[in-house]
Amino acid sequence: MTWTLLHAQIHRTIRARRLFAHNQKLLVAVSGGQDSLCLIKLLLDLQPKWGWNIAIAHCDHCWREDSQANAHHVENLAQSWNTPFYLETANQPVNSEATARNWRYQALTKIAEVHNYQYIITGHTASDRAETLLYNLVRGTGADGLQALTWQRPLIDNILLIRPLLEITRSQTAEFCQDFNLPIWEDSTNQNLQYSRNRIRQQLIPYLQTNFNPKVESNLAQTAELLQAEVAYLEETAHHWRLEATVTSENSDFQLNRRILQKAPLAIQRRVMRQVLQEILLESPNFEQIEKLTALIIAPNRSQTDPFPGGATAIVKGDLICIHQCQKKDC
Image 1: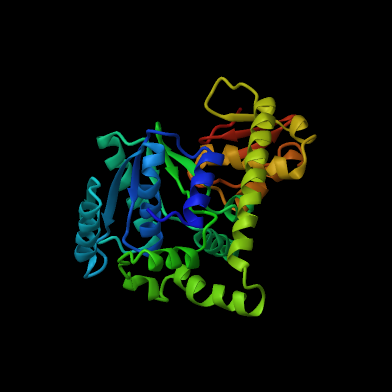
Image 2: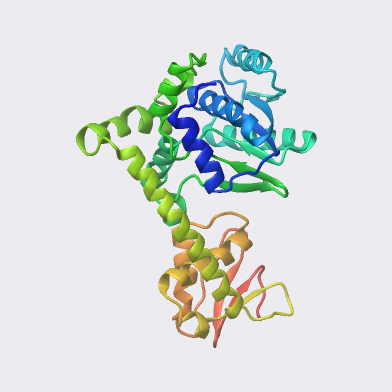
């Protein structure tokens, strides 16, 4: 095996960040593109040092005419590497970025559950991280959206999603694939400017590199890395404030002591309300929803919000903010 600087970097990253240990079962998501081929080649080369049990998984979204040929291509690669291969095919074409991403993670989780893999490994890079940061920024987001892709996150109990290439740019994976003559499957949809992320990748990033900073991808990825640690700290801090402010209720309503929350910085107040609304709405609340609930911390007595999605309302009653899950007259 040829040991490259990229091999050494990924070896150090996995060890330093404790992404996964020796002798673990790894399910590697391989699309056939340059990033995933770089990933699987690196992991297979490192396998003797770590004793991993590696398998390849491919998800066929059925949204391209060549998707089945793409799946066969990845399967043939797995056979040539003597690596177990699992294929999940969509029952009907998945034709949007968000839908495809959700289905893909569900499919990978299903394979991992059935075959007892503790880790799902994807080839997201620093370039993906930079693009995600820009994508979320122009749509409107806070630090949570700007932290972009994280090194690891739980998908379900006992199964973690791991991204070992977040310090590697797409140009580096392309060079690696070229050096090792890896047969990249070119995805035609990557050139389709109908998709927002492709416009960011094909137009915005090159413009920023040419006119502002050639290292914009790496710098934006570093920004996301810094924000990840800060967001984790703020979330934990807000959780403690929320526990301190929560008042036990005999019904299903939320009750918060606003006198306690008045002592917290505005950033923490917003995060507490965001956590509460996320539990009520079962989805991420938007800025306006968070702001109108946060405003009750210093609002006059009997102030209240208009209904949130699902009908919940919040009203100030003395020292308390009472959030009614349904229409009731009393807290």
